[in-house]
Image (tube, rainbow, N blue to C red; front, side, top):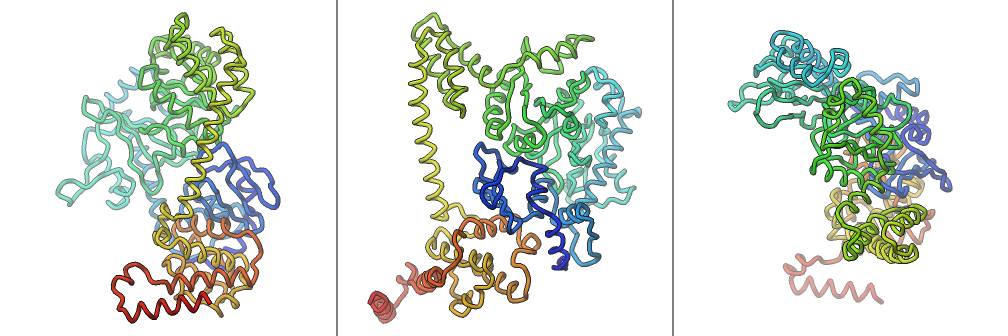
Length: 588
């Protein structure tokens, strides 16, 4: 059963989206609405809009849309019922009892519990005889017991059934352990084996303190060296960070981005609790947006080898796109953070502190990388250096930044600053042209419906789809027009199945006296919800007129009656004659 309408209405009345969203992002007023940088994707120009009158949002950049429940689902990685419960607790409301299906919520709860018990089991094993080699490994890496306890490190015994037998003794079922990715089905398909065995274990904890996944390092030469939990109902590796639960407590809103678990732990033990790492994948835009919630600046601290430097270059673009300030920490002698700290022994913390303080911003880092590739005493190479350096500067949004670094380039190369700025102006013009072309192509793609995955008929019926969406938008925003609309058209006239479904849904809700969008999250998938709020907010511009409504209705009816290519191929001469006759009558 669904949640009661009156409960949801009260919940949303007490949950102001602007107030709640302000805790996750910066917002500015624009007319009646609020705008800001989207918390769901990286962007430099605000495209996230909160519609204060309807207490809903839509991002014109990534297409995310919904109400306050959707917002909490996406920002806190909760399912529908969990998000409602989250808001209810915040608003001082009691959840209705036995009126809703919370099977997914219960499964997620069991996964959290299984992960927590697994972490306890692994930690206990680490300090038992069967975990000796794991403990020796951690001691050998310079970790002390306080750090081991702080991170809840553990050891998975060299036994394919140790964890699953333990969890079964606590009442966990195979489907719960499989859903948590703690076990996998064996080849016979009749039983399960532990996913992690003979590995040092690193629990991954979210910002609310839940154990959501694990990383494990093998104690042999077997591959892969590191094994991570696959995505589960409570974990998405591309959208989480190791040790963010610790780093978010640091007050200065700066994060140190490392490559791996051991780097984070070593840096943390040295006194830098704001270190985080990705989870077996390259940095993603989702992770950058997550960091933006807790930091204004990120210090990239990747390994000094070639792979680490390539990863650094890639990370700079992703972090900049998320609106973060960036510094790059360069470790001497090709060391990684863990090696560097251990090499300096008792002075490791202070030596690393000096590296952090001496780190350059990302522009200086990139310019130095380019400069080191050329011999500036040779004219041709000086020209090449200038060309490559200006490509770096052309990606800066601030003209002031460009001018400052242009002055430095002029001094280094003995070239007039005016010449450098003139060249930069040409590069900026080309960049702007490329951006406008990209935006134009995006508009064309949106209008054509080629990328519309929710309504696949859009690409074949763009004119009808647009009219259907406009009509649905009017219906939802101005439900008092429903009687007028349904007196002229019904859902059978709709060409696309998705829009027909929406039209029927909203007519039924309005007819029953319900607020049209109140239960969208419960009745549609997250992607469908985003599409619905796109329709509601993207198409509505002016209060409807009878002329506008009639126009869209006429287009839908006209497109419905139009013969398609496949119909023409199979139509008789008599049918074609009747069709041509009707077309001529319409043109009179």
